Length: 276
View 1 (cartoon, rainbow, N blue to C red):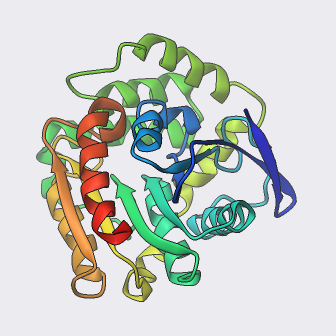
View 2 (tube, rainbow, N blue to C red):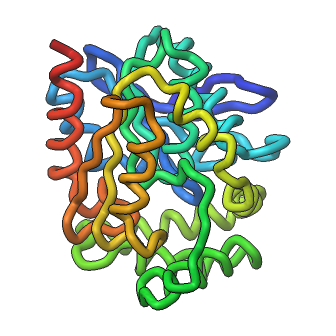
């Protein structure tokens, strides 16, 4: 059942399933909490209470927020954890990976661990040689075009590139749902503003995180010329011993959609020692 939380002049939509230690799932830009449809049942079966949230401006959450930075999203996640009775594990994808970093640094008593899926946590610097990588070049052109022109068509083309190889059985229906959501008033604008917000605020907080962090990257993620190098750089910026990198072979920018079983296995392996 969808519930709503008033935060910062708007409302966040979320849904809670299961019982046990709290895990909060936050999706990437241009998406909704349905991105975790294949992850949630497995986490619930493993004994967790799972709250999947729609980011501000996304899914069933309200539009018209004053800004859509990672710091804004982190504040929303902290408010949700407080509302649900934390502490919690935060799982963030892409822009929400950076937001989860900020939340962990700012609210250490509320966040016990962080899982970042293909996260945009560090400030990005593109080298000329990166453009020689075809998947990076093709994905970046469509990603930038969608953000610049507010084009749903270019965003869907990007999503095709960002899901190389296997796609879920409900792929066509999911693309249609994303198309419909982004054509609702205010939703594409929210995605554009998220895309324009640089991850500087998240990168500067990496050294202030005090809980364990799992970074999950797909080996074929088009958002980086070298996804492994990006994951290693995030781990290196964290305090020593807190970060761990897991690579999902064949995955693009949405490992939790393409390879949910592998991602859940990595998450539970990471979380179980802390839980014990």
